Image (cartoon, rainbow, N blue to C red; front, side, top):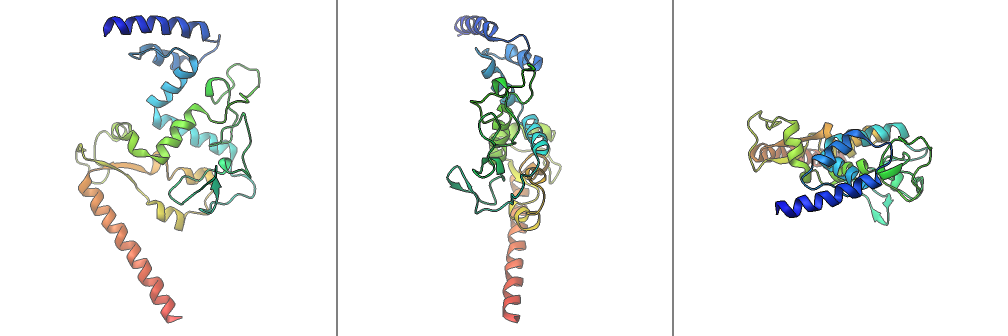
Length: 241
């Protein structure tokens, strides 16, 4: 296996060096060369970098969204259609994925900013030309995966919390689960009028926590009681009217 890996890395490194432009993110290259299997192309090196740093990708995607801002005339509604599929309050709002607000090729469908070579978010090469064949930043791909399926990034979140339960402060167990501090149903009910970049924080790192299973069960029970009380109050109000 070691001989096979050494042979593969030698070929991949030669291919990567041939394809590298004169300007390339140093951190990405350093991480690519330190991997057990060296990526053979610059694009794969960029993709691997962001996969290894999902929380960094989340911060960047939300920062890029703030640069774009909320599109004129857009409002968050679960009735919106995104690429033929109806959204819901559990899906992160994505105005630039909606046909009415999409900025087209060369712009990221998540944050709305231009996409440059290798899916990078800045024009390091100074030619001012977005990649017209790209519709995603490599960082935004990973950020979107985190927002839609945070359980796939539990290890990164555990490290960020020092492997301590966010609810009890105790050591995180192997059965620990990811939770939204502010439940998404409350985001829809109480924060739907917030700006779009602000809304994304409820799906990103600021609203994600890893908690032990027993703490999660207690929190879910409290949320269920809250919703039941809300329904009872609404029913009583309807009867009184």
